[in-house]
Image (cartoon, rainbow, N blue to C red; front, side):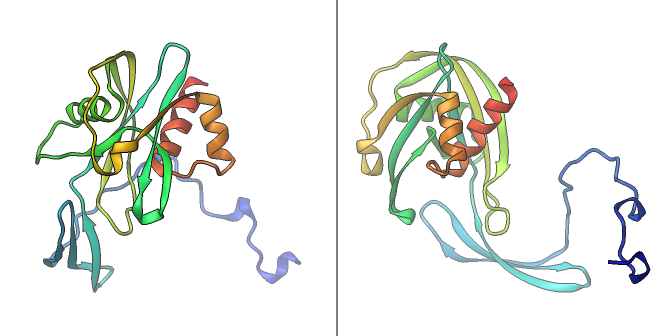
Length: 202
């Protein structure tokens, strides 16, 4: 298309922003907040707030937060668990994970609990791997993933409900990455964790 027709070239655009790339917290005036549904684990909330010169209303899941664990052995294998998830009618591969059960619960202590309860393991080395909002358009759930190393077995934990037939499998990190990129594994927490671990290793 001729330049005279108004086509903007890349080098004519605004200068590139040189500030550090980061999310920006925004405190907006909330006019009202009420619970539409009080659930066993999380609530559905309706809030009205001011934004952009208008009053908006949004419903979202008010979530207590959660943790997950990428357990890695000395051979660079990671532990995956497979269990049934009713909303998606699938036994998907996941990481040991769970909710922050108590208000103000320390996330690392929760991660240690979940590793023991879902995988019968404990670890000597713990480090932060990733932290993200799982679905920011509809939930305030903040999920922290920890990398656990120096693993050893613990006594078997009694499991119930969907956890009663959990399947455990050790896989090479590269194999997990390949399965994610190939679309065979679609759990979001697992996806972010293995790709982050792979990138940091590289």
